[in-house]
Image (cartoon, rainbow, N blue to C red):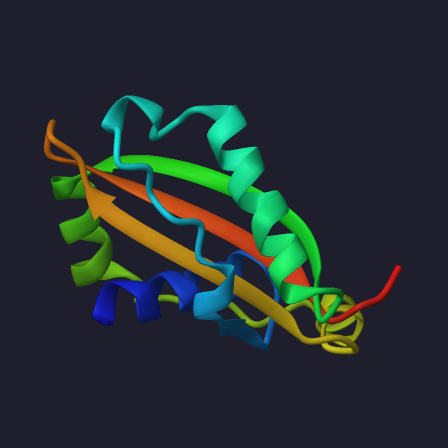
Length: 126
């Protein structure tokens, strides 16, 4: 999907990752009840379940929820990556010693906004 690919490129740039791989197994599922889209208990439970499922293959590092309008999504898709800067050499070296992963799940809610769930992981073992 174009939107997910552009998001991955954007996160690579924002975090100075030259490698950021999308994994479906890291996608946080959406609740059936839209009232729980931002519920921290629901999200924490999903993240715990994913952590158990990946069984130490990855170290989950952080999660994020982004809520944005369709206009912002369209603007992002049309204008993303016009000017991508050069990666910082030190960060490039540090972050590329390990592989970095992301699970991206997104959907349109009943208000017309996009809800984007992000879950980051690495193969670095603590």
